[in-house]
Image (cartoon, rainbow, N blue to C red):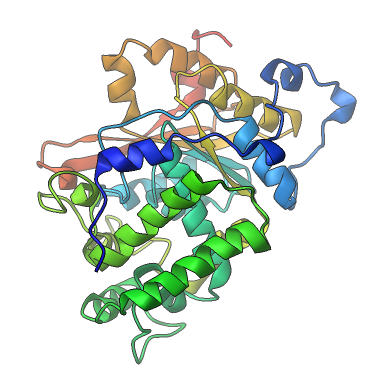
Length: 368
């Protein structure tokens, strides 16, 4: 069994540049904002080509940044509690913005957006979402998705009608496959991205994807927020399996793996290249501005923006007002919602509670 790499090695591996033969020119935010009205579409694209997908992802991106954790898994067990209110206050079928790992998928399954941009300061988050892209596209149902994600044999008795809890419990004690099978599956994931999708991933990008995929292989459904830190998975943090068991306040499981319908929302968006990962600081000069300009150019509006607790760090660094101005430049209306998390006082990762806020009202006066 291979030894897990250190976080320092991963950060070094994740600081990448596109291979020169495949480099796309950066997208000019100013040019996008100044685009002639005649060039703007009255709807978002139904599908992006592989080249368009990568051009948006890399053209909107800023330089690779850092965070104290690789953040491979959410630590928000209460994330579903805001969904009923979110569905009342926001809208389906528009554009969803987010940050971080898989909790975005649950909000996406609820809002059913036409297009998604996931912006994170670390290129490692892009690697994670490319891994997920391959997993969704290579599998046709939730059980096969989990088998490929964790490198476990598909359990007997799970199927279309299985609940998220059924799947979590079924996979928990299934032995992990030998490393040879993991290596074969890793090749499937990387070949899908580089050969089927023809994404020009360089060696360091492929190593970043390998790091993420190996982490899920090594820890299985027990992987948590601390698994990529010096705590080695210990601490009061929810595991991936715990999150699959989570519900809203009415005990309804709304997770992206709670039903085949939810899974298919994600699979369809990935199949059409409409979940676009972007590297950028929320207070950076390019990423959020470029995303907002693209949405405006295509006659659309932001439905929701998942922030996690990023605002905490923006305020600590004295740059929240720059972030506020970046958001204010986006096409917003009264139904555009922030989804944020903060410590509820319950302690540890399980104490993070989610709430909603009006993007338009909260950024009023921040400038564009």
